Image (cartoon, rainbow, N blue to C red):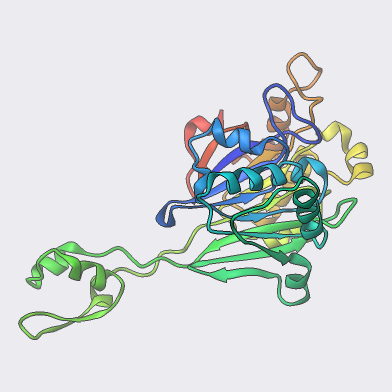
Length: 320
């Protein structure tokens, strides 16, 4: 699973950071999922290597403008491109009214279907938002000024590694049969022998997982949802020195994000949703927030627009 940050500022854009949006690319399926869609997200797509034509699902955390104002424009452009077969949208209850109102009052007609899914209904059950095609998406409520939700994406366990040397020792020639054996099937060879693919593969490998958590002050629900995840993307609107302001506005500090990561036992933390007050020339810079978080959770990365990460990996360049 590959993650690209399309917007990492909070509230309003800056010269270097657009407002919230994160793209999740599933290379094995040539598919994109989007988490939040702040103003000008479609422009960020144009500046990235991502293909908006691969967009299939959009998950909205809450209805504040810096997380949704880019949605009508993006959907309209997809309609004009003529390459979209439909979009599934997940989010708070008002999401459907917001999108349909914007499209209706602007006389915008889409040539593809929109399918809306209310996240609140998932919480009435077990929190499962989506379970299909090898992925499980769950949600949890956050503590913000309006209803807000975090999302976790888990990849189902992957087949173990196929032992080519064992297959060769059995006299099985390379070809399409290898794919069936790797999938664990029992295959009848041309000479009549039956070979159980499970004998030629190692144990299943744990699937990857990411958790996206914004906007919220520190809360136990975020810790529980993120527990054991490979990559936690967590808002860091304020520095530790402004904790009082964070509690007033129900946003997180750098140290709150790090505490969530530490208590949840995640593999890596990425700080995003930084206040515009932390820009070059001001008393504190984004790097100061990174240092605060690393004092608690060393495996922390500072997001920037167009940063791309692979879940489960920690490229050295991203740690700068």
